[in-house]
Each structure stands twice: as structure tokens, then as C-alpha cells.
Length: 231
Ligand code: C5P
View 1 (cartoon, rainbow, N blue to C red):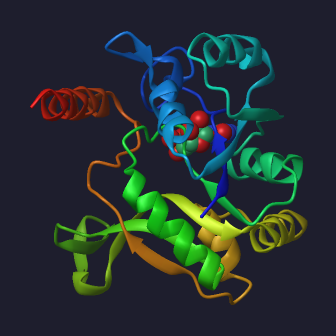
View 2 (cartoon, protein in one colour):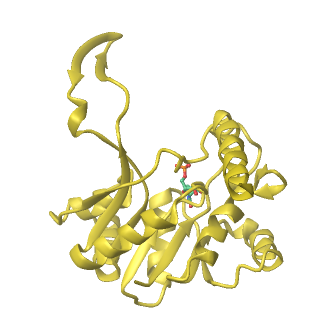
């Protein structure tokens, strides 16, 4: 089941405490976003890759794409102020297709099998997002005091990829823009149209490289995968 992937890559390095786009930070000599690109380059079901990038980083990113032979990149869109703007710019730039996957370029450890289940589910039902059940006890805190312990049985931590029929996510992204609505993920934009969104269980390794400690986890994940390959 084929799909097009949209990768927002136009963020900064603020929470990573880096003085540049965190995606350009290297893990074992290779920038983070290239690990993400390679997942989709290798997936035979991925037809095309589109990236949202900052204008001043475009040349640098294009150079990497060429150097690492990422031949599926079909185009770039100008990244916006917020992630949601970057994703919308990409969605408006891509040619119409069946299923679109939106995936943070900052999540390099996504599993191919999870992608496959997401695409299948989105093709059948319109919208499917990756997530994992919450492991810790979750409490609501007000003014430093616990106000509620939330039943975690129904709680999931949401990740990307988020997969949608192309027409649905384009409509949802444009509606949010016209209404001045800012969500924290693409699913929220679809949910507000009262469209059901399915969850697909992902892996705890699919972390978003966000803060400096994630670089430590990222290296550990890469090392353990390398050891697995060598077995
Ligand atoms: O900042 P955060 O880690 O939540 O960003 C998630 C993804 O969205 C990253 O891959 C980042 O490069 C991208 N992004 C973007 N445009 C923005 C902000 C973030 O493409 N304005």
C-alpha cells in the first residue's frame, strides 16, 4: 500500500539547547534527519518524500539529500512559524495522492511495520495515528498540589507518523488555518471536524529528539540496532 510522506524539518534547536536546527546535530557522524529520510528511502511502499525546510537551510539540506542519495525527495515547501504551518505548506505543495503520512523529521527510529499498519488503517478508515500506552501514573496538579489521579488505562502518548487520506488532511489543515485554530498534532485538526481517528500501537523507541538527553537515548538505540544487525 503506497503513500507519500511529508516531513516537517523547519524547527529550531531551542529545547535541544543547540545553536542551530537540532535536526542537523549528528549521531555517529550523520545528521539526525538523514536517519529519518533513510527509513522512507528504503521503504518500497513510500512513493515520495516532501520536506518543509527553512529557506536559509534549504541549500544545506538539499546537499545532504544528494550526498546520501535520497532519491525519493520530490520537493520542498517553505517552513512556517509553527510546525502546523510547515505541515500545511507541504500538504498544499504535494500532488494529490491516496494516503499521506505526516512524520516529524526529528523521529528517526520509526518502525517500518508501524508505518505499514498506519497506512493500511488510514486507507480503510481515513485517519490513523501512532501512539503508545502511558506507562507512568498520571496526575493533574494545581498550584503544586495533586487535584486528580487520572485513569491511565485510557491514556496514550501520541507520536508521529500520522496517516490520512490526502483529501481529508488537506481539508482539515486548511480549515484550521482559516479558523485560526492551532493544534498540537494533525489528528486534532481532523478530530475537530468530528472525523474518527484510529490509534495504531507504535514502539517506545520512536522518540522525538527534543532535549539533550534524547541524544543519549538516540545513540543507545542506534548501538543496540547495530548489534542486532551484526548477530
Ligand atoms: O519542535 P518539535 O520537536 O516539536 O518539532 C517537531 C518537528 O516539526 C521537527 O521535525 C521540526 O523540525 C518540525 N518543525 C517545523 N516547523 C516549525 C517547527 C517545527 O517543521 N516551525
